[in-house]
Length: 240
Ligand SMILES: [Zn+2]
Ligand SMILES: [Zn+2]
Image 1 (cartoon, rainbow, N blue to C red):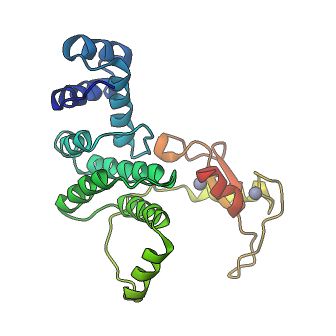
Image 2: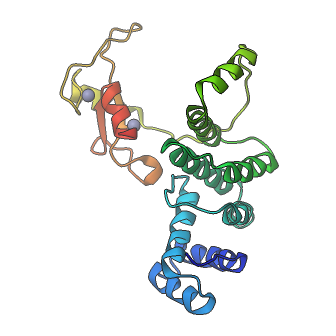
Image 3: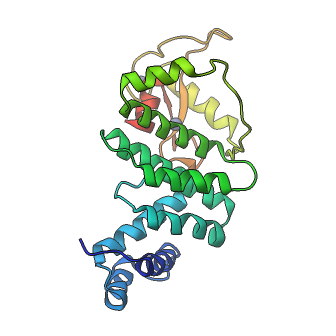
């Protein structure tokens, strides 16, 4: 594979922003980058996709170099603001967790770029970042040997500490939840089985109202976009 220079990374970052903003198509921008800088088109398109995923706070699966990450994260903060930086960081941790869960590899350089950026951010981190970083830590621990893990466990204070995070949540419509639960009538609308248990508090069947198209992706908070699921089906809808 041809070497990717810092100039490639910087130019690709700017073009990725243009693609994200709809100013140019990925195909055209990739072609131009190739003509102007020699970066190959598929690498250019990978950068565009990684940038998009980062701004959306979603996992990206093609590998990204530590150099590129080191440039992307602070530039996203500078050009798109703090919320976007948190989403980009969350996407990065999800990427690290994804890669490390494939087994064997430790993405130590990416980890240190992400960790340094995270500690440089002023103010309170989002719950999303903390959760994604934790999942990445779990992936790392699973890759370590049982001996290493047990040595750490033996040396760790068992009393958990706390930290404060920010959480941005959608204001949901209670009528949608009530209406969908009435429609389901105690039966999971995914697997069509009875709710697995009843709530101790009020004896109502335990089903959760899930949005088919997530609110975060522009889904509407409507009865039509919602479905009542048992905990199994709900987890599967998110992680399956
Ligand atoms: Zn179900
Ligand atoms: Zn859900």
